[in-house]
Each structure stands twice: as C-alpha cells, then as structure tokens.
Amino acid sequence: MSHHPVFLALGSNIGDRENNLRTALCKLSEKKVFSPQVVSSLYETEAQYVTDQPAFLNMVLRGSTELEPLQLLTECKLTEQEMGRNFGEKRYGPRIIDIDILFYDEMMIKDKKLTIPHPGIAARRFVLEPLAEIAAEFIHPQLRLRISDLLVRCQNGGMVVKIKSTHSWISN
View 1 (cartoon, rainbow, N blue to C red):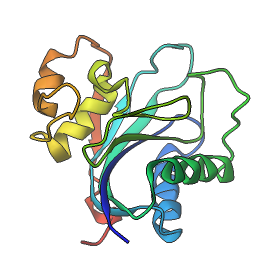
View 2 (cartoon, rainbow, N blue to C red; view 1 turned 90 degrees about the vertical axis):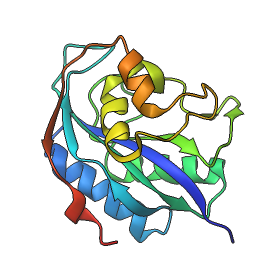
View 3 (tube, rainbow, N blue to C red; view 1 turned 135 degrees about the horizontal axis):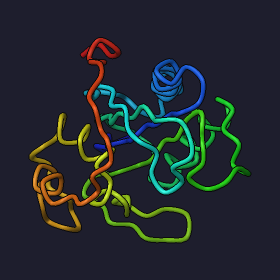
View 4 (tube, helix red, strand yellow; view 1 turned 180 degrees about the vertical axis):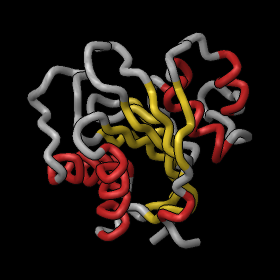
C-alpha cells in the first residue's frame, strides 16, 4: 500500500477542548487511519459563521494515510461520532470535535460527499495560521499559491491566537 500525504484540521469548542484534540489525534493514529508527522500549535479562535458560542481550539496535522480519500473521510466522521459529536446539531454550531481533510496528495476531488482541497481554506484564518506554521511553503494545488501567501491575502480578521505548542504530542 502507498502512503498518501494528508493535512487535517481539528477543532473543538465543547468541554476540555485540548483533551478533545489530543484524543482525536490519538484515535486516528491508533486506528492506523492517519500517521502524524508534524502538528501545529494550538490556536484559540473566535467562532465563525455562528458566533454565539464558545471559542474554539484549532490545530492542523501533517501526516500520511494508506486509505483512499473517501475511506479517510468515513474514518474521520466515525472518530467524531465515537467522541460524541452529534451530526443532527446546527451546522457550524458548538462541537466536541471537528476533523476536516484539507489536502490529500495533490488531488482535486469534488463530489457530493467530499471536496479536496477543502473549499474553505483560503477564507479561514483559523485554518491558515496553524497550516502556515507547519507548511508555509506548501502550494495549494487548486489555487497555485503558497499557504503563506493565502494567509497574507485572507480577509477574515477573526481572532486567532497561538496559545500552546503541541510538538510533544507525537514522536518523530
């Protein structure tokens, strides 16, 4: 089986947010869904879209998977469900865990279940800040711009504050 490079974004704004992110990372790794190589720091961010809710902790992971894109999506959603995420709740509302596939190889996929690259990356400072920390020179395969350039261009001025290093969460 081949290993595909993947970037995942994780976010949480319910309960012990830091523990929720660590638990999601551990579950994905233990189930051999995702092999983490680099993790960003934790960033506290204002809720977007539905703003009347607690602040989020967000992070981005770089690693690899042997799964195909739809299999990876299924496993990410299963992990969210195992951790108590209720998919019947309001979209963009509070959640214990959110796992998004940002990039998978250099692939561009658009179907009813999955869009890669994730369509919201360029407009989301809460994704771009941690992504730029670990992959500033990575070229967005669709927009053909470096992550650092996307961050400079991002008009979303929501609060994004680096609060804690997580580099010890994985062993390289």
